[in-house]
Amino acid sequence: MELTIKQQLSSPGGVLKFLVKHNTIFIFILLVIFSALISDVFFTSVNLSNLLKQVSGIGIISIGMLLVILTGGIDLSVGSMVALLAVTFAILVNVVVLPAAILLTIIIGFGLGSIAGYLVAFQKMAPFVATLALMTIARGLGFIYSKGSPITFKTPGGEFMSNFANNSTLGVPNIAIVFFLIVILAMVLLRYNVFGRLIIAIGSNEEASRLSGIKVNKYKFLVYAISGALAATAAIIVASRTNLGSPNMGMAWELDAIAAVVIGGASLNGGKGTAINTLMGVLILGLIGNILNLLNVPSYPQQVVKGAIIIFAVLLQRFESK
Image 1 (cartoon, helix red, strand yellow):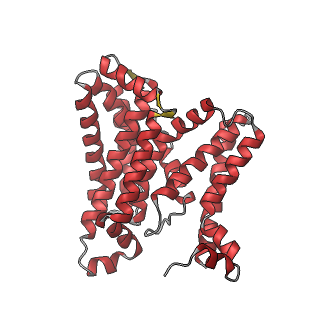
Image 2 (cartoon, helix red, strand yellow):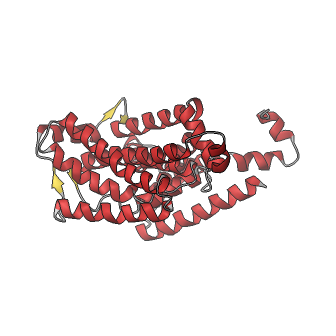
Image 3 (cartoon, one colour):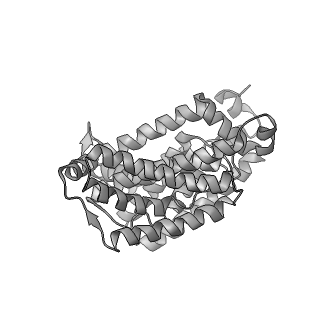
């Protein structure tokens, strides 16, 4: 039976273990406090709104990455898929009605993810190799279909999506609401649905899951397909924010998504991770970028900071497992 918080804190070394176990939340709180101390504008509605808008796209693909990582896999293709699908959505929104453009983009994303899922689950290709190949192909197709130039929205449907993506409801950016809804769905899926429990079981011990009758290949296939559909959702949001689809979108987003999942405490070996902690990981990355921007730190040093944080998060996982 899981120990209560009081029991955890009263045990030998309990406070330290408790802090390590819930390090994601404590890091998030400390970053919020630090941000408020260094900048008077941090808690302004404009800054908080911009922060949520900036993390929403990466946050959505991070949820898909979480599902893949829970099975012990990895998806390097999501950033390039965002670029290809943003171009795809921009093309579609100019030639078909908006609902059809959205639906077709998500279906195409699901299909692209299914290719990676098929290669990994049924052809036993290493996830790194399969998704690396798809990453290259998707980015190349994005440049081919767009002829290397951004495609702008030119229809009322495109204008509607642009307004939706750049406006708020009750003070919360609409695209952040979409992200939060996806997080809630993932929480329900992982905690209360058989599908979620099975993918965690597969990541914990694939061979034991197979011997117990679980259709391992089916579920490994599905997580990549879902990751592709979420990449399409992120692409629609990103393209709508800027009113165009560009093959340069989503650069290195796969790395940010992996970082968010790992910072959130998920194990790259599979079987461990939650949607709420991934949300915290996404917000922590966003806060770090926001802090550095407020301090006028150039973008390149920000990559160094992100890398250091990933190392720190993995070391904390190792300490926690002892």
